[in-house]
Length: 129
Length: 303
Ligand SMILES: Nc1ncnc2c1ncn2[C@@H]1O[C@H](COP(=O)(O)OP(=O)(O)OP(=O)(O)O)[C@@H](O)[C@H]1O
Ligand SMILES: [Mg+2]
Image (cartoon, rainbow over all chains, first blue to last red; front, side, top):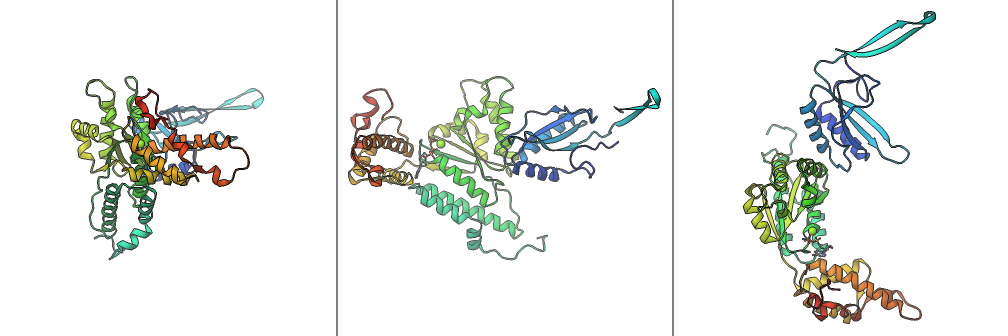
């Protein structure tokens, strides 16, 4: 099942030229770029693994693309996302995040509905192959 | 030629002006005193690159030229300053995408323990992408006496990037001529990847005087006649003393002269005009230890 989260996830996957252009846009805004990966795309999993430190002071997207290549070599079958962090005072949070790599075979997000007292229902989701 | 929309002719002179190359070269000429051979080499390089670009625009086949360079010369001869201009020039010519300069030495590239060097070097390279990486005193990367020196690791990464990322960054290595020669003969990999070797001559006394004048002018100060003569004498003496660093010695001397000038006017009674506040006189210069034999007199740096 195709996971949709972050920017652009309802579009076809971005190719490297398009990723590079998005990174360029982030750098123009002076955001720091981080690369993160995970094999658990559950929407409640906000803490993905960091691929190295966030990158500050880059001028050109090539530096990010080099790291992305390395990350894909090591975690090609994981989800990888690019995260752009704005350090402006009062903002200090992620401004943009988008998926740049998916496993060949994506897991299902499965919903479980359970009956509860007084005909109430409870819902839960889990990720399964 | 496969591209039907490619132009049939180019106007090099026009390209020279509109690309901004002419402007950078003019700035180089005006802002930097002396350095005739350096300016000549840069003009030639710019011409070559401009012609290459024109050939590409016409659809003729061109290989990406190797642009890595080495700048050799004594301290304070303007290597860093010229490297900065070079970054701007390469940017105007379209050979680097951003045109910034990242200035590093061994300590920025080489780590302290196993596994520290590669990430450190890569960090620097990522920042330099799209611009110029300037490695000052590059020979410190190579320590032949210690075969397990981590510098070797940085060298290998650099060599790889200089080969594979020629479109992404230009590396300029700088240092003193004799030590750079040794460094290159011990590391043929660098020698073969560097296409342009530019030598920076020492400045003559006359050029240093002009540089002094120009530096003062930038700070809105000036010499009076005796002060100018004193500066010329200072240059004459300073050159023969240890740790002489060409234009940088001049900059330092002027900083100290301004300090003394400030002290001098501070002790003057009564009203002062703008001229009094911006004149460097003979006394501000001649008091320097350089006139008393400099470093040989005591071991502190010459003041
Ligand atoms: N031709 C020149 N005209 C005017 N100022 C100059 C000239 N050359 C150098 N300077 C000034 O001298 C100082 C030293 O120059 P720079 O840092 O470029 O030297 P360098 O060759 O890189 O020295 P080092 O080898 O010690 O790093 C700078 O402040 C620069 O502005
Ligand atoms: Mg320098």
